[in-house]
Image 1 (cartoon, one colour):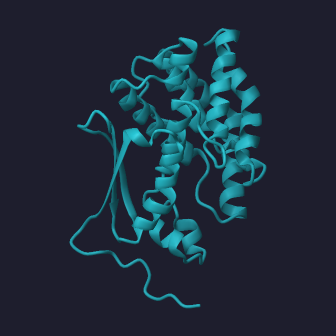
Image 2 (tube, helix red, strand yellow):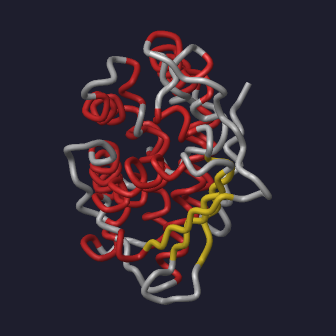
Image 3 (cartoon, helix red, strand yellow):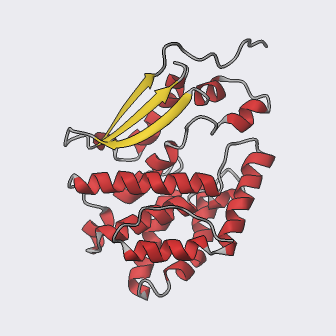
Length: 261
């Protein structure tokens, strides 16, 4: 059975061909399953599998398109005279492979993921790109995979987009597994306060990407200030992104009743 990533490929036929291959790839399905076994079952973390990479891929594509619409030139266009469509393929593939290294270990997973991605990318891009352009694509995707995690820094627009998109997968329920397993701390409580994350195009040309975060409880500010803000800052795209976080509803939702130690 194939996966459905529901990506809005538009007129990007290369991206459409890539996604068609990815959705039928049994090895990739196994990689995402193994990533989740390691993350959820063995480490008590949140989802790092197919659902996560689908969310990140869609967010990355949306962010990149807003940036391009507002005259931000992707690095693969600037440095290699390739196209915006190729940049879209880079961010989607970077999103799909960024956590693949979790099948080995959490620490250093970005490096393991890049190593794992090389051969898989060669197979995916075969018949869509010639060998020269495919090598450039693989180089850019691997950089996005490695630099989504500290201490590495994105040196391309596309890598920065993947890093931001990864950080934005924090809506309600995304931290529920470790929370219900008994992990009660500011990380889990604040994560459970995030109700909705929306990526929109802003009205200010200097800040074309607006991220609106709806919170049920003001504890969510920790998630925004301590986790999201540093990732956006280190992505290299901070000057283009405006984050607005608000507590919605008539009254704040109670996350926990009691906390003792």
